[in-house]
Image 1 (cartoon, helix red, strand yellow):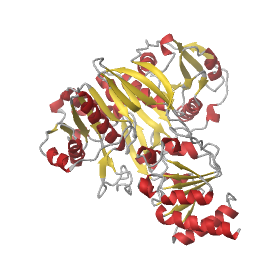
Image 2: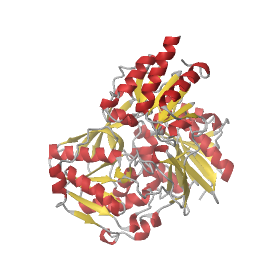
Image 3: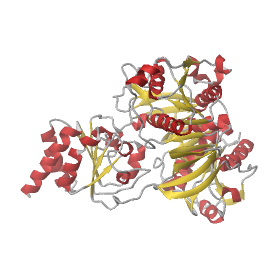
Image 4: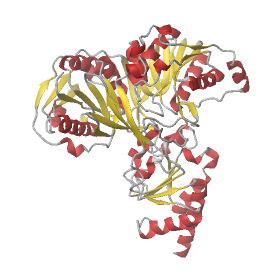
Amino acid sequence: MRIAVCIKQVPDTEARLRVAKDGRWVDEEDLPFVINESDNYALEEALKITEEHGGEVVAICLGPGRAQEALRKALALGVASAVHLADDAFTGGDAVATARALAAAVRHTEADLVITGSQSDDVGYGSTGSILAGHLGWPHAWLVMGVEIEDGAGSAVVVREMEAGMNERLRIALPAVIEVQAGINHPRYASLRGIMKAKRKPLESLGPADLELDPSTVGAAGSRLEILEVAFPSSGESAEILEGEATEVAKSLVEKLRNEARVL
Amino acid sequence: MSNEIWVLLQHRDGALHRGSREAIAAARAIAGRNGGEVVAVLIGKGIADLATTAATYDVARVCTVEHDALADYTPGGYVGVLSAAILAAAPAFVVAPHTYQSVEYVPRLAQAVDAALVPEVVAFEDRDGLAYRRPIMGGKLQAVVRTRGEGTVVLTVQSGAFSADDAGSGSAEVVALADAGEPAVDREIVGVEQAAEDTVDLSSADVIVAAGRGVGGEDKMGPITALAAALGADIGASRPVIDSGWLPRDRQIGSSGQTVAPKLYIAAGISGAIQHLVGMKGATCVVAINKDRNAPIFSVARYGVIGDLHEVLPALTTAIEEAKAAG
């Protein structure tokens, strides 16, 4: 089995964010980038499946030059090869345009299964994997908390989260796109040996022409969605903010909880 | 291209999802800005009563598709039926609630009809035409986005962003959805099960101390436990804490965990992603402790402490113990 895992490199969720000068995105200078959280779980799930059922994992990442670091990390974790969609023509896309490029890359890898995260921690569309399935014409499942490959059956049984604490157990034919939720497994750490081996593993960088894609159909040019502005929401208005030395803040807070809010 | 605004109603076990009314409210808000007729779309099996209910909201009509293969929701079933109808009618907008179900199939529906997709809208704005406000970076920032080109715009609206009461009232006619496609069921439902055994019921807790990713590790839960003990509180957590295995899953508060409404909710190191906020916004008094003054948790808090929880919580525990001792 050949599993393609689509990963995204996103700003570390713990990083302090600043709005870029043009007001249309975050300032990426000095911003730490990591593999998107649910994509980390996707990598682990794919590696687990190939360890049990055989086969190999190929990681695909669409993003600028810095995203190569995410692919090197995936290779260090045990992924066999990597595809980097680094061309500028690919960047700035909405979910439809990004999924179009990823679909071409998945076909290029000849994968039988795509595993990816359910949602990116930056733009948070939660849509790219599902649209990727649409472009490929494969069935899909989103918010998956369990995957069992049925040997010889060409199918998988997946557990999908529903609302109100319920799960749905589904049988889905392969090839398919499975979008996993954070928490599905316990992602491994890269070993020193893995990191050394990763340096010699194949990492292919592909542009639109390599994938026979018209550049006007991908990236910002192929997108129907345009970000006009990003800003901090007008939060904090309702909260009375206390700051300063911890003991003083704590005393003042207890006094307010007792006498103002009357909840102590 | 018609000027219709379609609303995809979600339902389960014979009841409309509350997000369905919120989606109607959002559609009416679009109609108020851009004009156009709001049309409710309801597909499933045995949905006659639901259609009657939907017709009591302020919609021009309720369009239904009754089909055995729609007895249970599947992405292929829904996309098959709806995409043909959308392609034929070319509504200006298609609105759905941003639920676990919609987020799974609506993007694929948008792709199938070659529409622009705007996920998780929280508000509408006017920027030389209709623009949409939506959260990014886990809710720490918001983006204003606009669509380009002609054709249908498909959008999902965040839970709670529009009031269900604004679905209005009316007496619409119920008709069959024109040009509905065939359901192409693409997966088999094996069963529905409880996600986790709820051995801990936080729904009736009076006081909750909730831990977030900012706690920093399973071995760093001490200040949380100590504060909970001083307050006689239950301990809850946001999803990252559960996913990292620092606390068991039955402590999770939020859209895929428990919904709570305590008198006092102390959120420590929780940034406040919408998935968490929907589970705790019913709390009477929220205290948020976070290093990042832009954390969205402060927007639902009555009191906010900007600081390191590992310094603030022990001080708070001491202050509470002293206050108790003083009576």
